[in-house]
Length: 314
Image 1 (tube, rainbow, N blue to C red):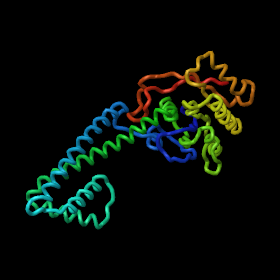
Image 2: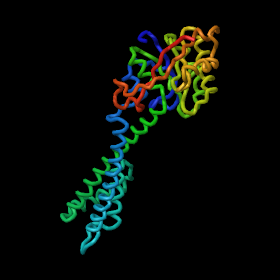
Image 3: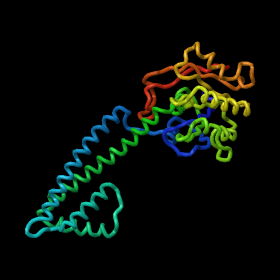
Image 4: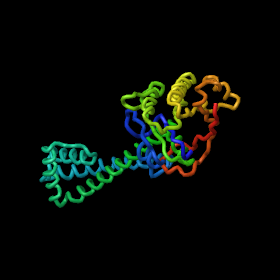
């Protein structure tokens, strides 16, 4: 494994939205930084924290509205109101924009600063104003945290739908030293992306420029929406590439759940053992679910199992 240099074509959680040329990866950590993600907590813990934050944001929003109404009443009523209704409205609008990180016009900013100065100079408003600002800052912090974790939750969800990260992890976990990753467009069908573009060095066309590749795999070939016919066509393209290059093996795998008795039927869709294609093809079987794979850093895999199997020449 350590002397082999595989190329993995498929989908990743992060990275450019357009297909990439071959990217050499020298460690699992490098792959995570380039194409995957890190999380301070696992998917279940993250879900619980998001639930907690959702409740805290709702409570914080209600408290901020209460404090804002209290400040507005005290600032705009009485014998000598400190602010007009227009001034408190501008102050609240600009402050809300600041908490949300939104831009405001210079004119509005100037008006809000003038209103804030009046408020801070009024002794009876210092307390309500300070409570309002503190509540707003706290709510803004909660919302930022909620937004960050929502992004991570999306990464976990995406990770659970793709196979390439698991394949890369398995390669390095078993002694691999370097591989190539070619990210395909996740918004387009896999069958139309595998061939790639020679000028852009994407897909199989891009791999022709990398002489040190010894194996080629498409880990995402058996996605939930993939038909056996389309999968066979994709595998045929990979085998054809390897036959043309004549210095690398196509790593293929039957559908998940294939029983030993079903392997010969699957092989009928591929080249026969006596053909030229067979010399450049290897079958990866079986799929084995291994719960609790050790060594996967938090956030590096959303699934609770890894795929492992045995290679056998056709």
